[in-house]
Length: 260
Image 1 (spheres, one colour):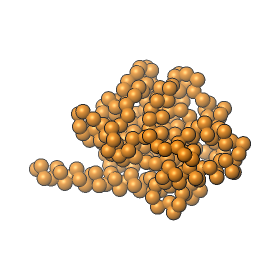
Image 2 (image 1 turned 90 degrees about the vertical axis):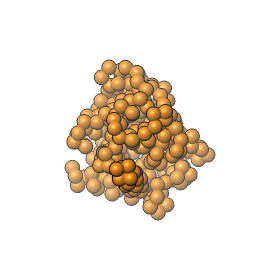
Image 3 (image 1 turned 135 degrees about the vertical axis):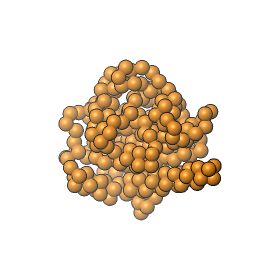
Image 4 (image 1 turned 180 degrees about the horizontal axis):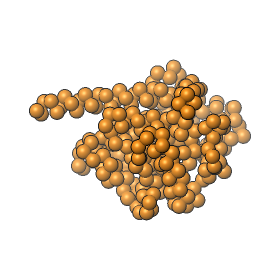
């Protein structure tokens, strides 16, 4: 399994490289890449792609929060009870004493997320002591609407369709939670986006995405770092996340030293 994951990782990073791959990809770079990949190379799936990747269409201008901007709030649902909670209050609870918390927007139907990226983003955050709140959202590749062309060794044992109601979303989220818990070797905290997909849209998260929030202020949760549209330049995404968290840790230690 370790060798297979490494092979998938290498292949995806090579195939989904935009530009030189050294930096995370911009929206414009992704949009140009995806138009060729889908409109030109897979015209039979172009309409499905347009419906499921609106942020990757030429001419779309991002409205996702930038670094330094307030993090959007909204309703999330507990997997156990289905109870409504607020995203940011839940994120603060998960953060505990940490001034940072990671929001990981997830979809099990994305082969890159389940192949390596979801677990790797989680591990990077946790390696710097940053707690992670996972948010399960609309499927990236529902089998009944936009099946992934990437199958083979990363194919799911059973299909994931578009969620028709909250119970279906919670069931899919439960599968993702069990999968990720196994991959990272520890329990993960996961909630579900509402059926209106409000948070997925606010964070422009499909197929998966991570945001780091600064929750040190009692009156605001602010975006401190974010990855770009996935699954492009994943090596750069990982490297930039590590660099940000390394700098944050260094500044935190420096501040603690001055306080002492």
